[in-house]
Length: 299
Ligand code: GLY
Image (cartoon, rainbow, N blue to C red):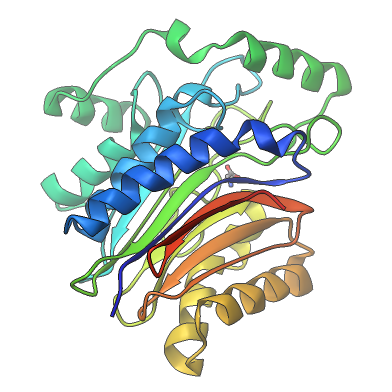
């Protein structure tokens, strides 16, 4: 059985999707190369999300959107399908790579979820890279917040009235040993309330991985994914109904729409290495590596 990898860079009505393609391609190639050389699914998804966080095009890490106070707060999670180990952080500032901090929570604490100041203190003690505020405050994000405030919009990454792309990045993989892993990272919603947390760091909502079913990473309006525990629902479709990745992704998004008229998408790698994606938005930025073949898509 093979190894596979999928990444996403958010869903929505994506303006000029071609501008994201070079980054998506470079990052999926890096992850594919790792898996081909025998890396674990956990290492591959962590590295892909780290690269997505470092890329200012995507709403996570460096490219995180600004909240209503004009500040960046990041959320991230990682899950290892080998025993349902998981780590997550929420509302962290100045941590260059929130996904690496989530992984440290998983591997070096007895806990699953650290927030805010406690998460940052733990990160500093572990030696994670800390950046100045200026690292995150890109001119694009400042202009985007000003536009959102002018509209009084407390909405999506770019919001349907701008380029319409929802933020969040993620990766899911199956390695050659049959282990699954998932990771998700976000800066949340543009102009969101101080203290607001979405689905990305919530296990079973924005992320899930279980070797018995699949690995999932979601993007979309976090409240809707939390209320439907969408990642976990997708895994149940695989585990109890025997669905493959594509069918489970389609069924999960149908559930999201039916239950809460939800807006977003998800990527899945199933226990057999099958890849699937589905979304209720006009498009989703994503790339896959399946059966040795790479493909990049925005629609
Ligand atoms: N899906 C990310 C968020 O709602 O924050």
